[in-house]
Image (cartoon, rainbow, N blue to C red):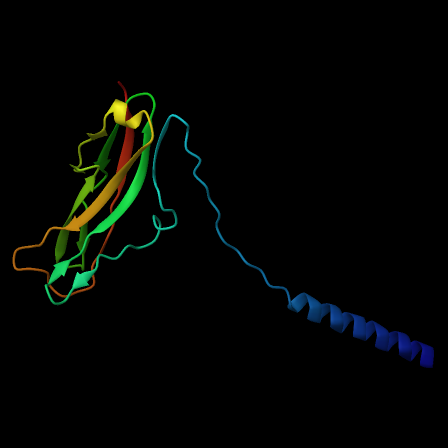
Length: 160
């Protein structure tokens, strides 16, 4: 009888310990991605890790001005020039007010039409250029609020 009791207690102990071990499982889920550019055409930021994060334009409460966002990009197209355009107008909004943004890439102001931002000779080698985003001050100045927006730039390899 004591042997039966010992087996029963051992069975209960093993079942309880297996539930406890199973209950202690931790899982992590996250996304991983990579963009591997072709050797003949690419436009990508020099400093990585910022592109998918919200970027803040600094506001100077003393002067009432918004600062700019400036980033460096590497550009290459061994088969011609590089063009760029905005996929949609660039602005910040708080739901009621709007602050338009000026988007400059390699000293070319971008709009909704494709424009050449690097010549074939510039883009054929290693080229580093600036992306500058500045706010266009509305009439009457900046109004209080929490503003958000998206800048969506399309880069194209332009044929020679």
